[in-house]
Amino acid sequence: MTLRQAQVDRDTERMLRVDQAGEFGATRIYAGQLAVMGTQGAAARAIAHMAAQEEAHRVRFDALLAERRVRPTLLQPLWSAAGFALGAATALLGPEAAMACTAAVEEEIDKHYTAQLDALGTKDPELSQTIGEFRTEERTHHATAIAAGAERAPAYPLLSGAIRLGCRLAIRLSERV
Image 1 (cartoon, rainbow, N blue to C red):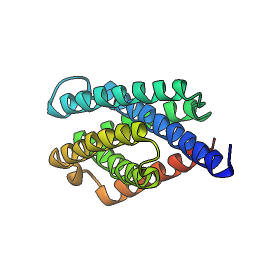
Image 2 (image 1 turned 90 degrees about the vertical axis):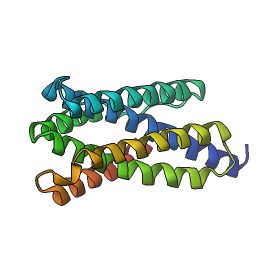
Image 3 (image 1 turned 180 degrees about the horizontal axis):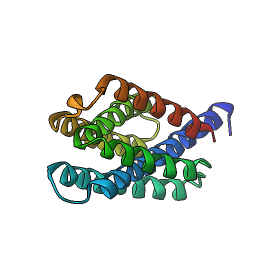
């Protein structure tokens, strides 16, 4: 194996590791929101629909990790607790804050997936296709959240900025740990 092949393999492993962690984290955020909001109301129905899509994304990344023998992040227990807590906390602030959380997370994930697609180029068509499909759904989640009033959440710029910063930190950590 050449140094270039080893680097590509490490890069792909990082992508898979962080993407699985991100989708897992998203399922935990939505679980926290639904635990507080229940299943009634338009926001809860939208969140339940997005949660189901995120679960399908996680299952696909779980399979890719297994197929390619890539270990998941060691931080998964932390992301489980932090995701659930973030979801519950934003839902306690109300449906608009829950949607603000979705909008902020999806904004960062869109940027993250776009950067990954640029880095992959044509090197891994299967992974590129998966990321491209999921990015399209994440963009739809963002649009849904904005349409549902995310920007009307209390202290939206502060809330959104803090969540986006947390996402960037989680991405960096999950790639490596």
